[in-house]
Length: 489
Ligand code: GBH
Image 1 (cartoon, rainbow, N blue to C red):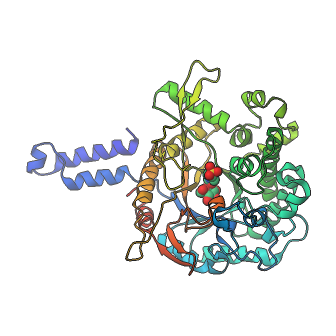
Image 2: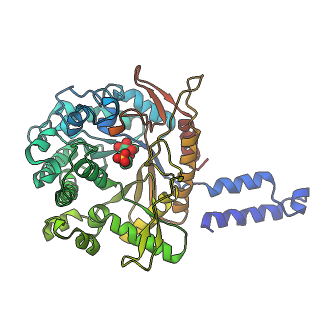
Image 3: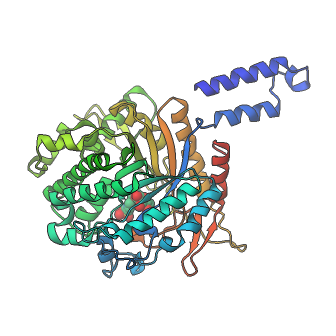
């Protein structure tokens, strides 16, 4: 039983004892109001817990050709026929570049205290290296000022996959160490301009995803299908870019900053909560994140990874491992789902990751298996493996088929179900003293869902792309209540 639960029951027992004799008290049954009060306490988040929403530049901004913005690999990829559902692209997206004031008001109405957005590298440095484009940076100045004027704390991500196309053309993007250096220069420049007002920074979003979907499976930009060796090297260069970026942000900051990552750390969930299965999930989490969170936190690749990769292992120096593992101020976890793991003494690694049965429930996106426990186990295992650092859930949310009802409103009961279950697990983590400090719901509004185009909607607000009208869904009302009460509702 958690402390809060225990306190709740103690209080309830006291109330029952003190109350004048009523029929229910005589029977030893607590009155309805007492039950409700204890239940409410049981669902409460810690004081000061930061509720937020998240988006990313290419998915919402639009204005692809405005104010000197350069091209990114996602412009090229989405304009290549057959790569994105219905050949959609982010040229306009949510037109957030022009509508950001209205979108900040949507956040204010929700009551969020934090906004995680990303900065478009080609908007700020159109060629990837060299001359900055002050007009591009100015958009983020305006956005940050608008957020602060409305009491919303900006959390900036420097790389959410929109690599400047010239860096892809020159050195093959993350295949080149020069891209890691270029990223650090860009990160330092942005920090020097925004850190008087932005104190919270994430270098990159989801290493595994942009490397594997972009360079191994070819389903995201730049659409390549490279050998293991080349993919492993690209992954290494990306985490090197992260480490150099952390150092550059700190070196150029005008005020004290906090720096972290927003990683798609793959979370292994024990099939049941017994010591053997829990240990298996810990080992599995460490190994399955060998090329991102593990090397970033430990400063080394795991023996199993190096052994399995063999001749395909990346080439690196001890100095690079040190840079990659530069200590962070907080950890951001993008958690949508988890994988069930069981203890398996027949295997040298001691665990097996289970393939879910076909009937396992998922949301509108087929990959989005419902696994609320991932929020609890993610926080717990990351803390156990790598130490007690503030954790932010930098993304969580889901797609739903979201068809407006006759009254124009979307009643996304499945999204509310998803959120209630996930938040219950996050609250369990907080109540056990795990260092979870905030939660950014993906996403503020429907947007360009990468290779799925506009077919999968993740927003709290429904976007009518023909008119750009935003309408709060039932889930927006739900999230508003969660924030107002600082509680699962
Ligand atoms: C996050 O990716 C991203 O950070 C965010 O930009 C995105 O909009 C959001 O989640 C919702 O997807 O069809 O099998 O090739 C989460 C990782 C990336 C996982 C896309 C699923 C497609 C898998 N997702 N990926 S597949």
